[in-house]
Length: 72
Image (cartoon, rainbow, N blue to C red; front, side, top):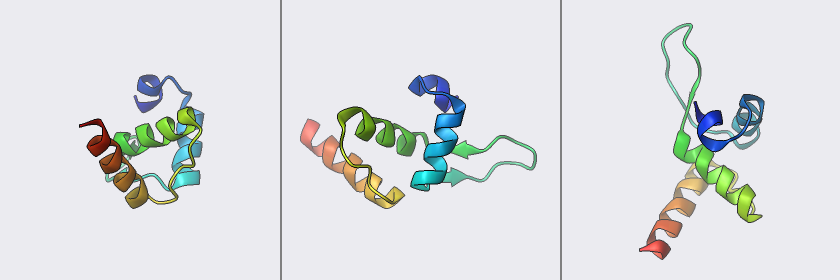
């Protein structure tokens, strides 16, 4: 679902998840992996803008907070 919402392939989403250590949520046994969409969207935004992607989920949380404050 994240791949479709971001207009990217599922392979790209899995690569980002591995490269940037995207948060995952616990899923039932046999269920698909569930990634934090806000984290993936932040990575997408950084790549689109040409900005460096923060290395940790916490760094991306801080970036989202900064961007939200700037937009308000």
